[in-house]
Image 1: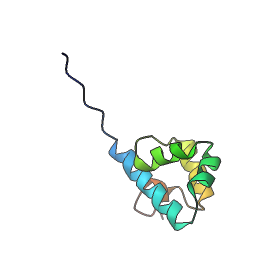
Image 2: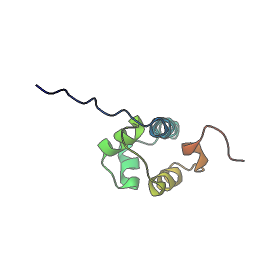
Image 3: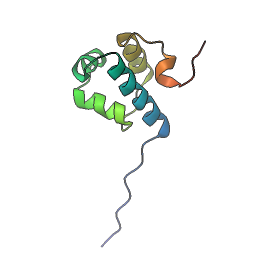
Image 4: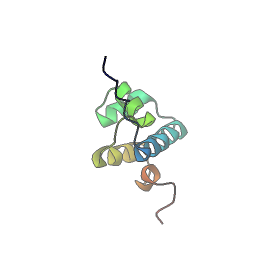
Length: 82
């Protein structure tokens, strides 16, 4: 019987962005369904982003930051850009 390859881990950058996305979504009182609609994803797709198991592209970051009324840096960095 062959060996089973381990499931690949999440990218730490994706995990950090997802953590920030969830934090700001909660802070802004935005439910998963509303953000999913803005991103044209399913609620499960948003949960994958928030857990770091899916990668946000630049367009999704821009849309999410606009929907949550945030500057882009709030999702991609813990340090203010100004």
